[in-house]
Length: 491
Image (cartoon, rainbow, N blue to C red; front, top):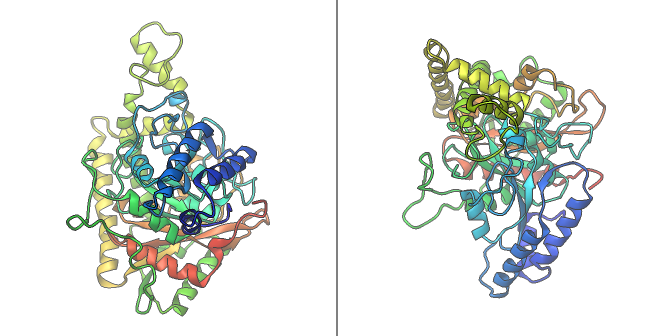
């Protein structure tokens, strides 16, 4: 049962061949037996109560396509009744009194929450090794990282501990773990999914998205997640009147005439040969499906790393100032005065990577450095966005390339080298800085340096509000290949 897609599970539920309660129990048993550390909080009582409610709705014959389907939330979305920790000691025992909009909407659709998923602390990381509650293991090879920051989400779907999971993407934190774990993941256009109730890292970059086995499953999930939210001042909408957009509408459209931009900057020095071979083979498959490859240039790609690591830490410094031991979260047990309490609370509550980014962000926002660093980074951000717009306007309909320069590395390999971790995001950061939609789909395997099969992801980048087109392209590829159906040997 656990190898079924969302669409297949929905059909079984609607035809009464299985109940939501039976499904939930099956997945809870798998989670309990798992050793990859993907889940931070599981509460069978809460899960089975939701499953019973879904069964009651299914019995009326008026259930929606997601009613009774299990899923899990990245522990960056606050969830009423569940611990919401952001992978940090600072919020180790925090239980939210309300649901994030994403949680609220998926619950309203009848989905059954299996629990909260491990992640890099406050979504800061590329390997899920920055979690205060231990690293997640990649189910394809438990020596390897699952990617980050949404590593728990990607690993849970790959290990078939949940058919789908939510995630967040600030600089690649959905696309990169999806690639490393061999599943499908999509980051929508910035503003498409409400950030209300999503614990903030970098507010102008954070965007919720979804992991699943297939593009079709991602479309079904996103249909419920997208839409305007008045509680989020950055929320956008493209809805027409009372008609909500259907992201499954173009799934079966042929790809004849599609122009695929292939940036030369994504295939230069630093790209592993095994990754390039898998991506090139995927591009050749698209040619067989009727698409045309067009060589393009995104000349500001190399500037995305310094630009991101100025803007994101600056916003993190501001957002995380609220964790001071006064209102909620961790507070130091012993201190001499208020200032001492602030310092000890934050030193104890935040991990090393979070402290590093707060310090960098505070520095670039200081008087005398704001114009030289933060303002300049925002200007370069606009140039990066302009590169994409020039490519879409003059040369191509979508852009494709690798998600990461290599397959997943081993746990601990880059733990003492934060810059090496940052460089792993070279192909995903510019998309986030521009606010564009992007996704990763499985397209093969590489050997890496450990002579083991580790997944490779193909990145597909679209123009603003182009999610339906991206999902169509991914779905057509997945109809012609079987990479997305493959699961780790121990699953």
